[in-house]
Length: 132
Image (cartoon, rainbow, N blue to C red; front, side, top):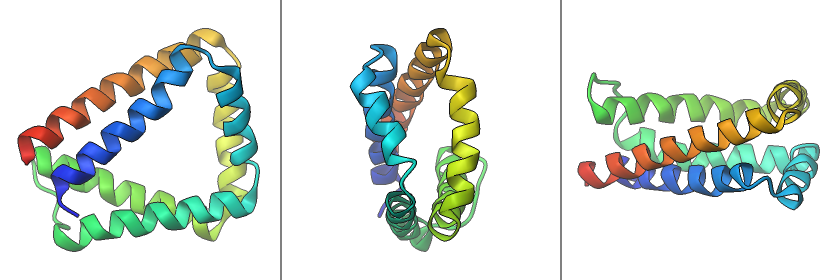
């Protein structure tokens, strides 16, 4: 997968994750909590994430000080996150639950995180378009 395609996919993912947080969709938050408490789902999601990111890192693995280098660095971080979730889903769930209590228990923090994800999505989308 090309860096530009990876950037666009990451942008879409951030849009999909960010908008429900802004509009405080309780059904989405409940689904998200149930999803991340199931070890098999976390393991499968981690394996899929790692498999997608490997297609990016296979083509370009070197971190450089430009836009592509930032995306490669992010790809490496997501690869390690996916492997961590796939190999140790119980530890991943515990760590994520700790952060979820901090971020999602307060409505203002949830909305702020949603806006941060939307701004990141816009940046990833822009970067994906200029790298193409």
